[in-house]
Length: 100
Image (cartoon, rainbow, N blue to C red; front, side, top):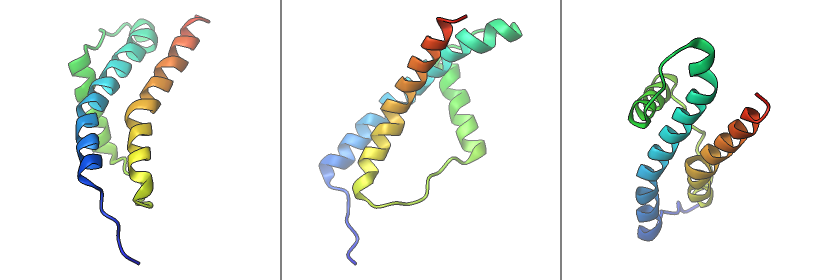
């Protein structure tokens, strides 16, 4: 079986989505922290840069990697975890705040 390589355009797209993903994760974490953690435990709110650093630290410590799958799914998986997953978490968190 010949291994497929990611094309230059796809690699450039993934590279461009990386900063967007990091910022989006920081934004979502800071929002969820402000809605659920800070008021309950009387903790300070997180700024987006602090939330980005916290998310990166937790990801580094817990070593969250996914098993290697087919290369065709690489782009789709990255987009889902970089964009869709944080937006869904934010939406679900917002819905929960409506019941608080």
